Length: 215
Image (cartoon, rainbow, N blue to C red; front, side):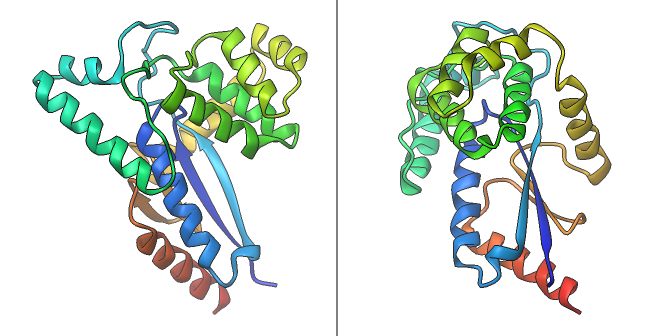
């Protein structure tokens, strides 16, 4: 049986990544060969130098990058409206950009424990809609536990360096295939779609990779 793979690089503190996830899922849900598609989620840090704790919200961060208050608020409102179109309730006025490295380690643990998708959804929802501080270990433990990941196991993992190599390997692979921002979707190991594109674009990606694999 023909099988294809799509690697998806995201950051848990990236509002566009959650939108891209929903749009990709819409395309995959309509793909006639969806049961033969392996989706592999990969780690990516938008800002490796970000602090583990921050009081600065996303709109405030946008203003620091050179936009006026009105422009920053307009951009946040636009992203929030696009999120609503795919069923997501954003509160970017609560979301604080922080270091996501440990959150990515939690995701690798969750994948190994068989609850990767549930934990991914919970962490992304907690960040974009509830103002959860994903750089804080106890927050990560509590939010992942809501999605079925044992709290004691998560806490023990975070105290050491488990999955550090796995996160770094994902980032190295990203560089190797030309991924420089997220979300990024790579089909068949070579076809790159960058950004939270419309579902139709992802449908084309799936079809192209499938047709090539089937020949």
